Amino acid sequence: MSRRTERIEEMLRAEISTLLLRELKDPRLGFVTVTGADVSPDLRHAKVFVSVLGTPEERKESLAALQRGRGFLRSELGRRAHLRTVPELNFQEDIGAERGSRIAELLDAARRGEDPADAEEDEGTDAG
Image (cartoon, rainbow, N blue to C red; front, side, top):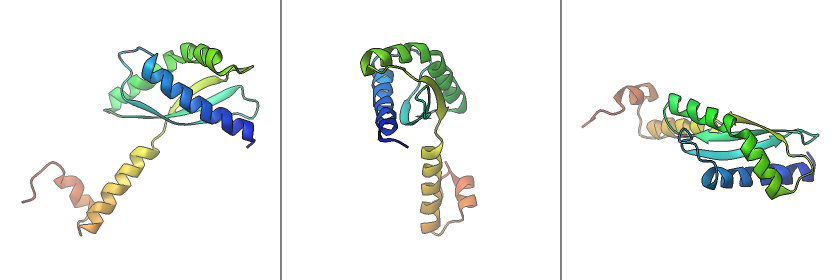
């Protein structure tokens, strides 16, 4: 990957984060964090990875709101970034953070000497 591609990916991550926080006004958009971007070698397409908190339905609605806001985000990126070609944006859920949180829970249960399967069943109950 070229240094230019890396710079564009980082710029996209930062600018889209700012736009989501301050500019995109969609009530269906929940708590979304931009975790990264992957730009094609020709710089025409970008996968934007996002972490979305909430129920499965809320996450689905947030992703749909992001897809609907692509045109607005792309035009704002064009104004702010001064790129010759602004990449087409495609939002994808990054489940890495969720997976990492689940692994941490399992490790904590193992440290306490619990069977992870038992920890899932006892979740939300008083073990005392």
